[in-house]
Amino acid sequence: MPSRSRRIREIRLSAAVTQSATGCCAPPAEPEITTNGSGITVTGSGRAAAVPDVFVLAVGAEASSDRGAEATGRAGVALQRIRAAALAHGVGADRLATRNLVLRQGYDREGQPRGLVCELGLTIRSDDVARAAELVAACVEAGGDEARLQSASFEHSDPSGLLVSAREAAFADARARASQLATLADRDLGPVQRIIEGEPAWVPLRRDKMTAAMAAMPPMDAGTSDVSVAVTVSWLWA
Image 1 (cartoon, one colour):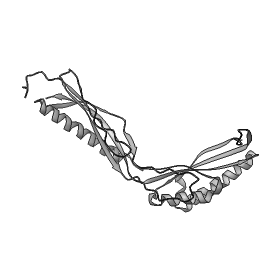
Image 2 (cartoon, rainbow, N blue to C red):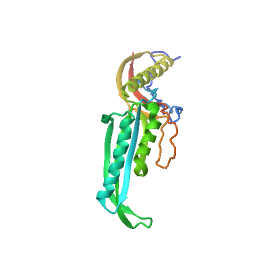
Image 3 (cartoon, rainbow, N blue to C red):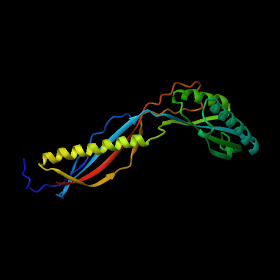
Image 4 (cartoon, rainbow, N blue to C red):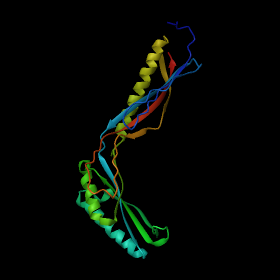
């Protein structure tokens, strides 16, 4: 064991762990060693996971016609039916948002211009995650042939709590690594000199997407999603 009077090189450890979409951990990166002897810098990683409590459905209506007004009218009527179905399902009006209004040139199978196509979009946010599949089926049925399912996802209504937990875990991980390395070097940790936090990474462990071609809506599982945080902490030697 080296003595305290012996010059200690700073050990920079890069050990941020990347969470894969399946929740498995990637192996930590190889540590770097620098020649600055003022202290130790360690990157710790933390993760927090929870079951999502909001279902987000992006749905639309599409209609084509030789006349723009007719295409827009048909798509608008279909979107109103979808909107009514969402409200009947218990979604509040303040949880509905119109996303887009597009009137574009249509084309036939040979790529020649043919009529006009109107596309309308609506985002529906529901707190009733358990009935997500029922909401999708109701919207598709209400929209009829003009209905288009564009995406569906689950998210957290308040992700700040997860961030706090992940940040605490990351700092604890950095402190544990630094304490172990300091003990191995026969040194004591002093005050914290600097803290740098990386960008949080949200990792969905399960996400369901649908298309308008589905004949029947299968059950939808929210699963869990997590957030990973990395913090780099520099300690001076005591």
